[in-house]
Length: 63
Figure 1 (tube, rainbow, N blue to C red):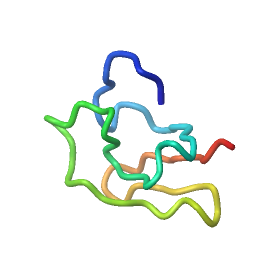
Figure 2 (spheres, rainbow, N blue to C red):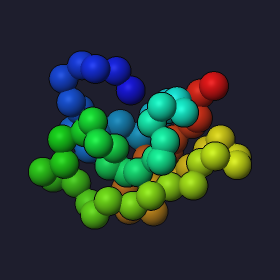
Figure 3 (cartoon, rainbow, N blue to C red):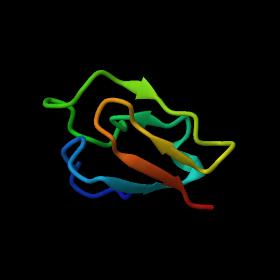
Figure 4 (cartoon, rainbow, N blue to C red):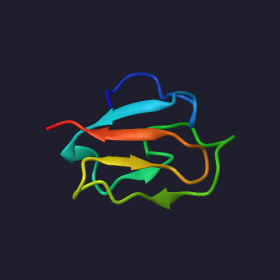
């Protein structure tokens, strides 16, 4: 994720993340969370993909 204006949590359906974003949580720390679901940590290290059980956002680990 970039250092731009924070995006609204759960706004996109697909996110690319890097190892710098680990441990991965949804919503991510860079997201505005006023309208988001509870924070959940997502295991992405082994498969390179994770889906949030709350909002269905799909995360892909970019190396």
